[in-house]
Image (tube, rainbow, N blue to C red):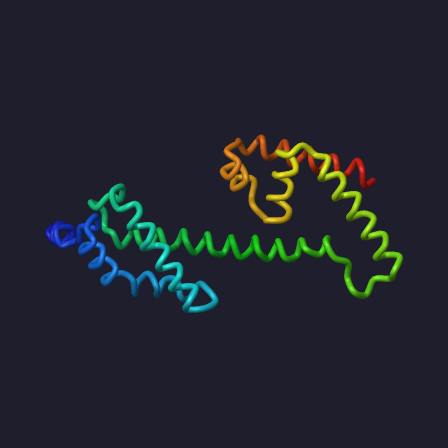
Length: 177
């Protein structure tokens, strides 16, 4: 019990620049060590470390200092790593979704013309959709955002996002079949 109190007593006050600097000096290498083996390059890990400490600085007045700050930093790093990997998956998905915008090189001329015609029909359908429905579709299919992220960005409920997405897909299906 004495060690715990002693550790808390010597914990830096992260609300001050000096205390934050002490926190960074103590724990930046540990956070980096957690991140470096879970991302492709040390530079990415360093970026995540910077994001974690930036978040701590922004939230310094709301962080409870009665709990060990190391635990908070490790949890924050874990969440930043999860965010990083989700973003990588979204980008990969977005790149694979680009396939619908360009035909493959080995397709015949007729296939290419069919593709162009279908693409033009789909674009016309999208242009005719109400702006909120079109916006949800584009954020989902072209930017790779989740329903939750779209809802947050547009300040609507997830159910509204689902409904608008359903409207867009139904309109596309009706016109393309």
